[in-house]
Image (cartoon, rainbow, N blue to C red; front, top):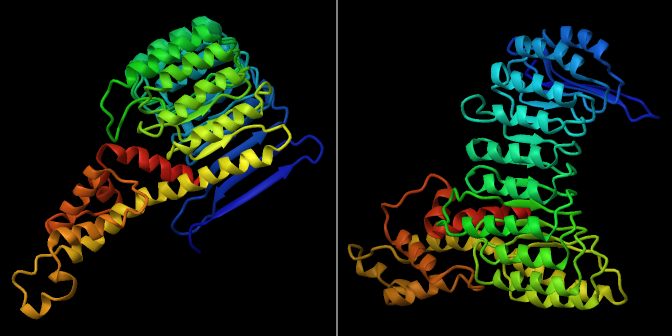
Length: 461
């Protein structure tokens, strides 16, 4: 019997609570043990954590542990940490959201990250009553000296406030592993936002940041603008540092804040996903958004996805401008908005047609370089040593004409002249070998490769 997986689940019909177990089947090749355990909404208390700890201590293959929405406090997490450290050396995901850890519990987790949690990649302690004290304890250990593994950190719906976000900002100056940071609904205010983005200017790994619902105004938005403008001075590479996704929803940005934010986006070299739902923008603010979309016609990278939902002060005129501005933008692939006016379907049909067009262009950016090189290997091959009989047909055409035929494969003009030349030069040289399509694309697209790679990911997601 080969290695397989067995899933067992019990769920309450009325409360939605559940226990989900994933375990490896026992056979001659694979040992038996849990690799995922979810005990959610079961009312687990500190007292019951002693029993749970005895179970965890015997699970050396456990990779995911979810105890969300229970009643675990700092006493309970203390009872769990030692068994986790001794028995669960392969743990990579720990979800403790919706409990009662508070800052004391987070301090225990911080110690765990230093001593035994070197393999942990995802930690969720959202909605746990964590204050700035807990944020500082956690931030102090998320530096190269103590932890090099954590990639995803969720601190949603806590009480970090400005001082806690300042600690997160100082951490980001040194941290080299964190990729996703979620800080929504933490009473950040403008001073916390400023401190966070000041630290982010020195960070090269964070890709996604959620600061929604934090009472940020146009004052805080200026720090985002400064960050986007400062990072835009760097030369884009395949490993271009900088945020790719930013969520500023449910903040009081207003038209002034959107204007400030768009000032940074006009110089953007890395942000591709902006979520700005419920930010109190009006038709005046939408004009600034449209300017950014038009700038996306010449800037690469530029936004691929834009969400403006729940901005109820926008009128039909705003969405008509949005559709018009999108015509000039060949990069934007997704737009989310609420169209609540008579005749909205006509406006949205225009937007949809543009998004479909851009999806085709995105796929062409991937397909055309491969096609040009593949056909170029045949059309541009050296036939000087072949017989005269072979020098007929298309090979009788001048080499420049054959190159023009290959360039004509880019019927939507999605590549630049430099990229055309690069593809043809690679095709002409038989010494150019690439082990993967990605290597070939990187050679042809050069600095645009990372952006095109994200476009394809967006299309397929």
